[in-house]
Image 1 (cartoon, rainbow, N blue to C red):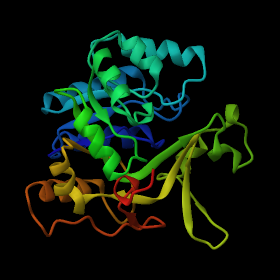
Image 2 (image 1 turned 60 degrees about the horizontal axis):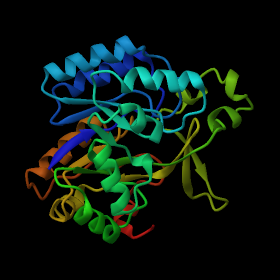
Image 3 (image 1 turned 90 degrees about the vertical axis):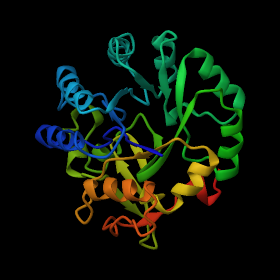
Image 4 (image 1 turned 180 degrees about the vertical axis):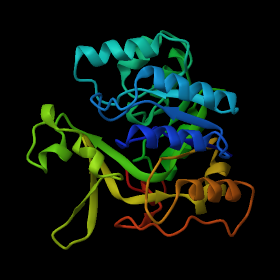
Length: 287
């Protein structure tokens, strides 16, 4: 089974981002997603910087895909999307505007397109989708049904590691909790390297706030279910970048790579993030 590294969902410093992707060049992963999915204001890297990172990764033998915003709110964002989608790169479309701008060129149908039935999957295939990232809320049985109905040649990718992206809002939660408005946020989301954990009244970790994005507090970890997913027809597992102080992302990649080679003892080190690990809704039966 192939491994991919999903787009960086957090706002890290420019030098950290370059160092992160430099390390990925020698990591045992097949595909790397670049670009901004959460907030268009996050511009630590320019488009030329992303292009330079992409060249290095391609030279290292990685497939590179540029991810697009999941929530389009302004004409400027649509214009930026147009420059990416009409270029020579493969995109991950997280909004139907990106699908339209792709103009029939091959693209990846991202997890935020809300694909829940075979008819939608076939429509996206006719529009050029060559890979489909399953929505996180699909349970195992629903995923299995869609895998049977997918068009010939379309790959299926499943989110397998990281805090799960659940929802987006026009409001910026990271700014609001610090009593700042969205337009004058000063990029406070960068202070929460893996999102800001939200607790219930019983002091149990529930969500993580990441700018305009809401994530799960728990970290999805499907390393123990790789064979099950492969048997069901899943082609690629997505590992979402984290900076958990107790677990280096290189350790996560190595563990999944060893599990993919059949090493039954391969496991990720325990997470220090509040909530720890979970097996994710795609396996727990929540829809």
